[in-house]
Length: 501
Picture (cartoon, rainbow, N blue to C red):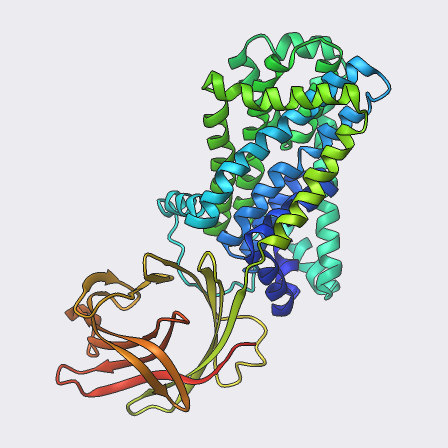
């Protein structure tokens, strides 16, 4: 799937990136895809593949994971509608079928704003992943390293025989979805889920045991869809109560996160995949910490689902209305009323070094104006417009008037302010020299330009002083100069073309 996504080309990658740059769009995409497929495992595996192929950033993918967690609950809700002709059983079935949905919806209500405004989950998952991997700007891998070497000739042969990326995507998707369905069926037979009485006595003896078995069985099946759906008829027939079954559903919610970890180990961009897997786990784990240990909060999703069950006694269509509102009407409304502007810049730089010919590279910068997260794609060479794949990808973020681009860090603050840092050249001390109202670079004039002087240590080499001109409105580098100790300029790179497509 990763190989297929890379074969789609940069235009498709740009479309996906722009579509998911708005977190509300990402939330709805994850919710809708998972609701249609009734499998969060497929969605999370797809997201990991998208991040590994460089099509979307970690920040853009987390809302999709949140949406997938809500979308996967539609299956148990649909199962509950099968009891509509049995009035009393229908009430209990709706309560059991919608508990998972209310649990994840409440978790989204709490965590989505924290991620939207402060990047809580993305920063936490990146920090944890940073203990194992250092996500820096790196080249796009054209060759995929296959986890199982035995299958790599088959994948390479398919890539040669089927040059069309769309057909490869469909093929990889069918293989992924088919394997999940087959695995579910095999494990279901082993669990003997057709005997609900045995299932209930074994799995719902106490809350801790219920939670543990929910986690383990779902981790084995790699999908919470089947385990939570089995609970619905058991609760509907009064074999167990929703209160006893709730810990099992919460455990299943955490157990399903193993899919992202497995998918991450099978992709080339391990750092990005692991970050997504950790974010998926943190989302479900924090939800569990909020709504499981504290008795008062534990009652909230149970009461909400039970109230909906009671409502179905008066209005049989209440469950169907709830599904339509939750999975379609509300997400579309949120997108409509919270449309973000995604800024896309195309900047061409000219590089001039003493004794060498001029060279060029192009930078495509995409930024979500609300979250101020995004990425820079760098295309090296003179003919940069015709290149389909970037040579380097830099994850960028702006926090507290600080621009983070890969390992580089630039501050937008008052003159005289200094800080220490480290980048690909070495360690340095940087200070803001001045703030220029306007600066003409080539034939282009920019407003509000910060001039930063960076003094590298002796190990950095001959050009140990850099002067960087930064655009505060666009958060890009306009000009960089390499200086000798006597302030003689030995090399420059500056903007020569600038456009906002």
